Image (tube, helix red, strand yellow):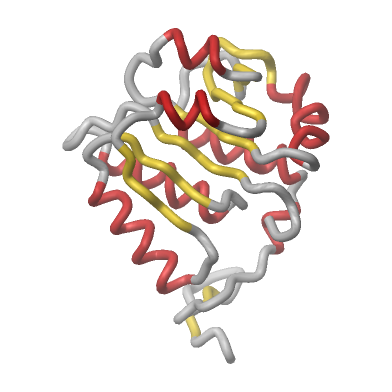
Length: 179
């Protein structure tokens, strides 16, 4: 969020054909819930294009990028590395520490797909579980970002939008952002 160190979501293990929707949803969730960038590892250009299209239409700033390897990103990260895993510490037990760390340093949020290599667990400053039960990595990311930003991202203003969704009890309304 503005005037805070960066939050970047790193999506590991994209499997074309199998993970296209999930990787796209990781990027869209990262964008909508306060992250500044998403990095997709592997052949995820379709997911990047979709996220770029949504950002162009509904506003930013937000960047999505396809990279070849996660290892240099994690090893060279100058900030806090958080790996979301069902095997980690409970998010409610570490969220205050993570908010305090984020006040000073950028945060890299690592989200896996297939089995995550053990080096990710070792390199992470925090291995965090959003429940210790199997569930969607998109759900884990959403809950984590909401906890990290303490709900502030829900009132975010978007720059450069071609359209804006008008909140309504029923129905759907999308307007020019200047209306």
